[in-house]
Image 1 (cartoon, one colour):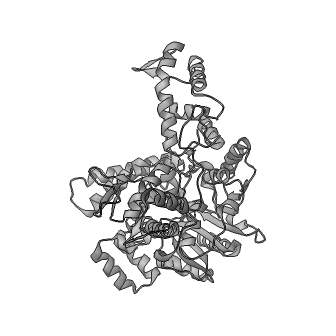
Image 2: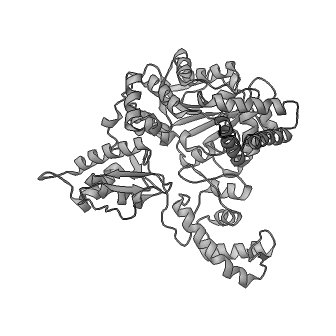
Image 3: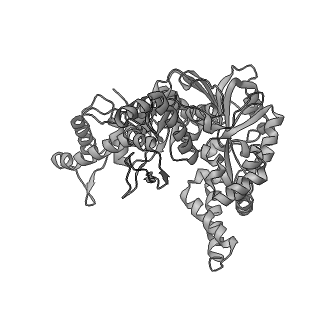
Amino acid sequence: MADETTGNTYDDVPYYSYAYPQTHPDRLNVIAHLFGMTPTPVENCRVLELGCASGGNLLPMAEALPGSTFLGIDRSGRQIDDGQKILKESGLKNVELQHCDILDFPKDSEPFDYILVHGIYSWVPEPVQKKILDICKRHLTPQGVAYVSYNIFPGWHMRGMLRDMMVYHSGQIADPALRVAEARALIDFLQGAVATQDSAYSRLLQDELKLLKRVNDSYVFHEHLEDHNEPVYFHQFNDRLKQAGLQFLGEANFHTMMARNFPEKVAATLQKVSGNNIIRMEQYMDFVRNGHFRQTLMVHNSIPLKRDVGGRPITDLFVACAAMPAEGADPSPANAGPTAYKLPNGRQFNTTKSVLKAALPIVRGAWPDAIGIQDLAEQVHEQASPRTGDRSLSVDEVAAVLSADFVQLYSLGVAEIRPRSLGVEKTAGDKPKVSDLARLYAKTGGPLINLRHETIKLNDMGRNILGLLDGERTRDMVLSDLVDLATSNKIKVQRSGQVISDPDTLREVLVKPIGDTVSSLANQGFLVGG
């Protein structure tokens, strides 16, 4: 979200550099596939990220996809320097970070299969916005996909009002930390001042204060106090795409595109007022949701897209789902009635489909990795012998049924479709191994990214344990190393509020945290094969 034409605030206040799963080539590849494209396989692709900060999003991609190449540029020399240090220590050879202004991106650069622009577009002036779309048009391969995130109306009408207040109140303060503190204080004051009012304004301030208390100072500064923050309506952004020779492919969060995820009457009205025009549909859904942020995928305007995703086969792709039967539900394929399933995040769905009921325990067993549809079909066929009427289904027929079922679950946002297996080691052996980059970040204080490209928070002990899981150490060796770190005062281990220094007591206390942490890391998708 840096201003590409004036002084660079990102050198003064670096933006936390995280992994964003919605930007991963895996996600872009699948959505392009669902709309009838033939995107470049992620295992052998070229990726460009504009505004890469210190590489927290790009480096884990590069490690996970060693056959692909990655280029990140950012105008903040400080953040590129930070990323270069990590890159040098990581030993990664397929990624490059460059200190470069977006406006100076070379026109003769080679094309890219995937272009990522997260948290930049709304926060830069018009010339840079045009350049971003020009880069997407000029440097995308014929079947390439670009991702751009940006703030939108109508939701930002209300949030923008608060931004204006914070900018006014803190505008004369030069120090970024003091500006953020004053901005937070203003919202806190306003919220308290109207606390007794039962009004939309009071509720707005309460919601915004809750948000500001959850996020770090860097986010507040760059989201609310930068000189540039220009939201648009989605239909306006689409007009800009057309002018640039691009077209709307979809949203990175695919299920948000489905009108059927609204209540039935709402969905029917949306269909009526949109007239089956996808741009109008997306705009009206923003009106209903009071949308404030979009993560849009775009492609060349010459590509014919097939919007009937329900009929799109995914038998060459992989699926993942962490759903378990809800308490008291009967998940047997022989049960013709609806079975309720619940995800760890609390979301639920029901199904009456016997083949899907037979498949879901197998898919859950593969979690946190994904399983190929064809492999899944073979296992379902072997275990359940699915039938339709008096006829047994073939493996290919089971695969076709599961293909349609998982596209539907993906459209509901309760299952994943991926272009590949992630290589997750689901069973933690005696010598558990975490990726080199994750161990490096654990030691340097960086974000901990799992193989699913998710940022996971661990406490200090968890980070210390993760940093030792190199596939060479046994659990007992990890225990000995932690004891050595504790007795040399490099880490602190406490029990009942007291620091422990006795080696025997440390061994006794640390056994359980090691076991619990390794199991948790396996469930979270951190462990890789030896």
